[in-house]
Length: 252
Image (cartoon, rainbow, N blue to C red):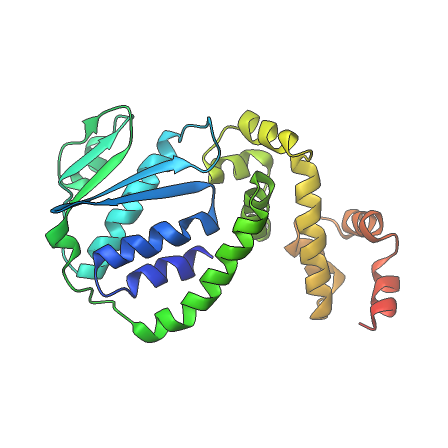
């Protein structure tokens, strides 16, 4: 969902609306919330974890700050420079050059933009795209707010990570911006585990692929198994039957 959310922001008429849309739909793609504060002459952006008592690591803070900056610069078509960049972490010289001003060291993360820069018209404005995306994004947001859980975020990351082959617990923890210990602790708190969530996603992906009549070899590879025999055993554990029997039962 990240690409639709990003393009929904880019299709805005100006930066203020873009940041509003981005803040609204950011939670669809991960456990990070965006707080936008609009003042008379400035607009401020801060980030926090959706789960209490969890601090954002350096990777997440830096990535999110650069992402918003890239969004504004792409939309306006100019190298917009923020008024303030603040972070609990130190950044290297190359990163500071990208921001275009010294980064202040502080307890929180903060981006402050000149409101006039965010009122400049977006070259990427696209009302047709927004009309297409708005309903879909609102539906996803409503569903997530009903079912919001850390396990849900883990599943979202697994769906995109499994086909790439990088879906070990360390990979997913990195994508979420948390330590492996924190990931496992949060899942335990929801009476589940990484292994259980991985199997839930692999099973769902497998049943979906079976409907479009892919071969067992293709499916086993797509859901993260290097050996067909291992995949076949897993499938029987999930469903209580072989792939062949399942296809017959479902008329596939």
